[in-house]
Image 1: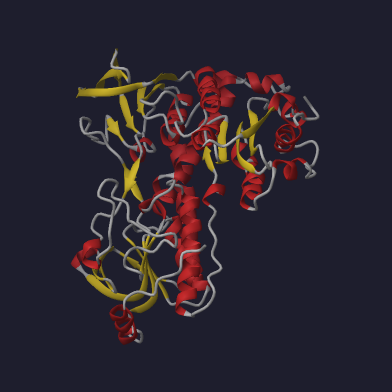
Image 2: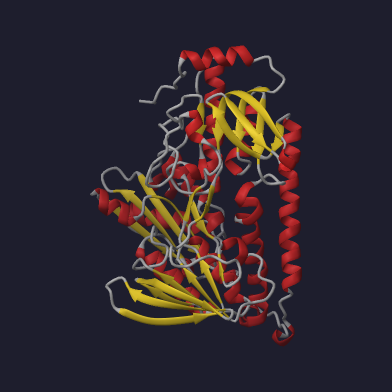
Length: 502
């Protein structure tokens, strides 16, 4: 049963009616211009709501467009192309001769491509705001009441605005370690690691999650000696063991990255442009020291709510995580204030924030117009992607999830070594893994390890979203020869016990 939308106290509704004709009064005001925030603002405006968006950065797009998803993918692509040419063996194998000695990495040009791409996309988001009639405020928004926000701008100026509903979409920031101060030079976060002007001779990555592995790959390909230190028993702790082991083996072989899993950093000394890390095993054993030129701290992210003055609006947050507490409709305890994306529970993913922003706009529209709420979010069908080489993508439940929940399940694994198209393009590394419930074959989850996994996972996303079985996927015709056929073959193993091509 869906959670009913809350109208809020009469006092708030009365206040809204009083200022509804003011020049700076809005139906919806979104605080935060990242993927969740700007999508929510655009959708609200498309539904006919008078909408504002508040963003402290000069450019919209949030962490993702400015210092996260987009710039990192630019460097991942550039570094991969360089690595492929420098290695040359894969091209030689398919009949392309290259002079590997002449391959060179132009870091300045790579950064220029990264910057140009970010500028084009953030300019595009600005254009979408203008096109949809969203009023934009550049500054730091803070609540002065449940219905009023003050926007602090440059030069000491401020502007007050009022809205019937607020959407908090302020995202997250890099987490830190108490004994290791980020100085932006030797010890860095992902932000600084995107902007190195020289390839570091050596780099330690503390944290074997998505961010650490992606940026570690970039600099390893460009010539840095990269060592990943992960406290959990395997990298990508939220993925299944066979998946993380496959990726680690590939990164060790192709990019010569070293890994210390089940290992933590207990102390650090930074001196003369170098860092010396003391390592200790999760079991308490001494793991020695590690001396490097750069340290990337990639131990996760935390909700960013600083300066919002949520207490002035009466909004409750979790005392342990700092996340804004919301109900199933993404409403806070103050019903006209909503929260989405990284500041609320769930995976910190740009596309999850987008889904929530889209849904909240529909919910607000339904409330204001006393209409039906058409919004829908299926958190089981939100995919995760690691943009290394090979990529790793998964959606739904993992084997570990099924075992923990006591669910009887079936597994189908199809290797890309058996794919005709994969052989044609010399990209046979990886596999498709499919999980379905044993009692009724309902598709529970899927994972793909392959150079194109991020693009290939979406048939499973759609299938899980619509409650399909693995047999439904297995009986769907896929074009031949394609990499996507492995999706069907893996589903055949889960549904029928056998694939056709192995």
